[in-house]
Image 1 (cartoon, rainbow, N blue to C red):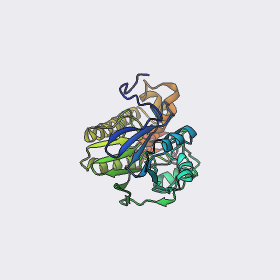
Image 2 (cartoon, rainbow, N blue to C red; image 1 turned 90 degrees about the vertical axis):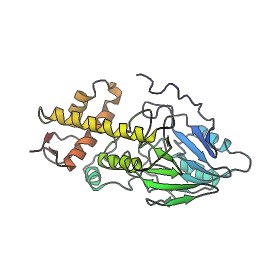
Image 3 (cartoon, rainbow, N blue to C red; image 1 turned 90 degrees about the horizontal axis):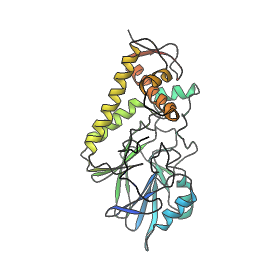
Length: 305
């Protein structure tokens, strides 16, 4: 598989300056889903806000604590969403530093009604790694402000990749978690991911004039407007491909994924199938498709009318 960004080669465990008062620390958890690893951000010059502590990894915990300079301490821990590569280390980091953990809410917070219904049928995550026991010390409502020592973050509830996902505005900079990344498109996997919410969240970020995005994985996105436009266009293209394939007759999400994702490695086909399912649920909600029987991951879907 071709490297999507060979220029992005940070060393794990090394705090790299990105801007005055902002450093990035790469977790040692590279994979096809996490690229080089999870980006942990250290915001501030005295009281430090740790954004996305990352996976439950003692080496990464040591790296975060070791990155604190004389006179610095961790005052806040903010989690963008409850995936296993973002949230679990928050517990150990809070224990070591006494800093409280902030997030939109527990792992199921913000889940849409249609996804609640799918979850009630037994549909669970597709292996992308939910942190089901995650509960923050402080829940952050949409529009809240987190004020620290010389820094302030605006909380933007941006579900889609994950129901409790938030983006964090810092002036003209936005920490976008896994909603917008430069190296790949975001996975949207029901019932925790919701494509209808994803498109709305991207449109919400697109309505603001951002200078740079700092994502949960990969390099900074230096042209945020163009990147969001590309992500939305990509999703609309997938939608068109699904509708075109269904013109030949009803099909399941898996069958559609095999037909549409022809260049996807077999190991990633389950994730592709979940992405297709997300589109099918969205298209059903918009009245363009109808499942044969109840809405489910295994149902066959047909064009309406």
